[in-house]
Image (cartoon, one colour):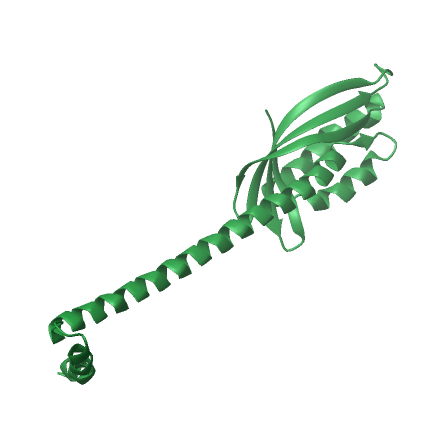
Amino acid sequence: MKIRALWSRPANVVHRLSAGMGTWSATRLRLTLGMAVVGAVASLAGTVYTGTELHHDSATAAAGRAATAAARESVAALLSYDFNTVDQQFKARYDSLTGDFKNEFQSLGDQKIIPAAKDRHIVTKAEVVSVGVVGQSPDHVTLLVFVNQTTTNSDSPDPKLDGSRIRVSMTDTTGGWRIAGLEPI
């Protein structure tokens, strides 16, 4: 009943407008106005959806840029060390890691990398040559990182250059973008 009452009030307006429209009937004018309202609502919904998608795309692109910048710095630092200061270097770099990977890398560093570096007098310097985004969302980015690593040790005092491709998972944390995984390819 209430809907009918609401619909009948505009009828007076419809009758007035239809008088000026000549051959348009009140029903035809009602249908035309109803379709215009439906069209306006659909247009508004489309605008809201598009705005939301643009915001998400913008946030995702910004995440890719921020993760790429963080990876350039933290991957090079993580893969560079000197046997004289490897303990301090690794402890300082654990802050650039997150999640299970942080625990795994700490264990690997403490049990294998640090003892080997000290035993064989390893000095390695890593340089990130290029970074490409493989996949991204606002809080997680997967990168393909190309690294050149120059290494010397007691067995080979002449620098040896190795090129590597590494899949790097970056996660946005309250402390910034951190490495959540490294996988040589």
